[in-house]
Image (cartoon, rainbow, N blue to C red; front, top):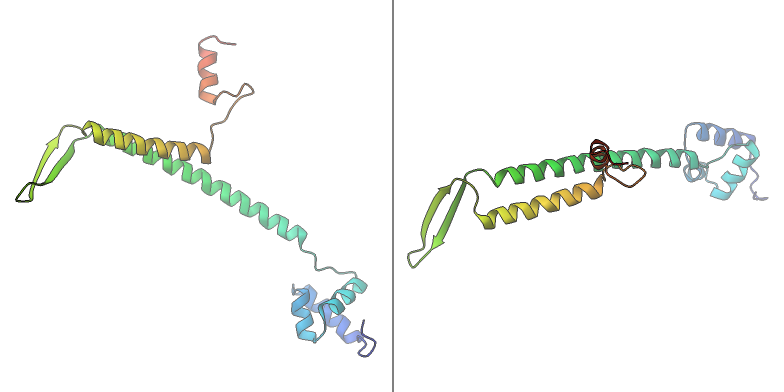
Length: 159
């Protein structure tokens, strides 16, 4: 510690108080007009630490759990999107055309989507399913089978 400006007992006690209030080393240093190193030395003498590894680790674990939950929710929504897109393939579809020399608009209600629309819907549904499976892969047994596949294997008498 600086020999020209010795640390007083009152400063030591103030470091203890501010630390107990949850203030960081740099905040305390600024408030007391001391260097961070001086505050660290005082803290060491007092047997207190500014290490927050445990708090950071716990906060990181909570954040990771939150992200896992959000990925699961997104995977569910993507699966629902894929199901809605697939259903649209078999519903009545309004097809239209704008064109001709008079730029006419023509439409027709068809009993189900035309083949090119079905193909686009299926491709989009497939992308949603792929993303869903990447976010939340199906559970596998020890042989690497998805749970449903393992059930089917058992029902068919497979070993």
